[in-house]
Image (tube, rainbow, N blue to C red; front, side, top):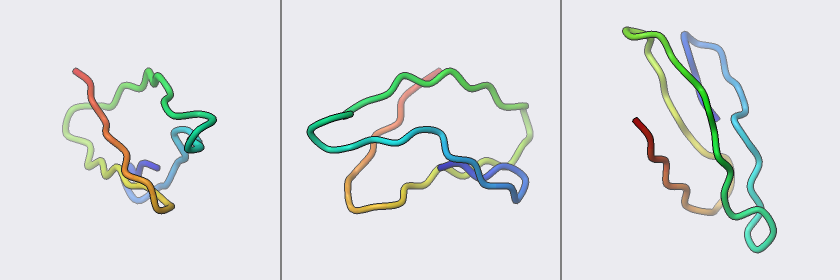
Length: 49
């Protein structure tokens, strides 16, 4: 999940053992307040440039 300027959006859905990863291609505007978070019990690692 991501929260951008108080609006929440689902980025992807992962399932352990079935969908372990998902490539994402999102761009955000410099200066936006962005919060990434998960719903569920698994750990998620986010990388990018």
